[in-house]
Image (cartoon, helix red, strand yellow):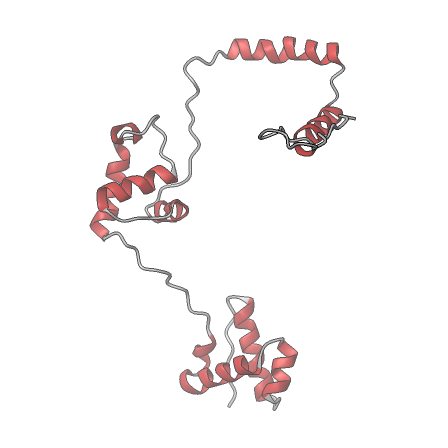
Length: 196
């Protein structure tokens, strides 16, 4: 039986097609398994799929994942609730985070979602990750520019600032010598590290 092979969608599907080609050339299952780096049982399952379903049995099937725990009407209501703003639900500040949205879904619909799944849920609704474009009200751009161009440059000159040297000092200070978290044990010798 000669089969027409479609273009594989991923490397795993390509491997299954290759197994079928080798089988048609007369290879034994053990030889196919060794050549493709899979178990003999995997090759057997693939050949069973071909016998039962034909060549389409080797195609990659999309994984459906767990079904959405929100009903379709609840999903449609979610953007309306989010449009009211985070402060309307007692959160401090107007920014929605995944953790806040997970809390809102739990409060309103009684369904618990991990905050890591909220981004996928929002993506499905057509929402994208955004960074707040608003700046702090008290932010003074002229003062910031003055500090960067005048004060910071003067400090660097006065103290002989060297970026690499500063980085090494910070690394030694904060990684090598963490602050004592409690009372020192009797007989313990504190470690003193030189910053250079």
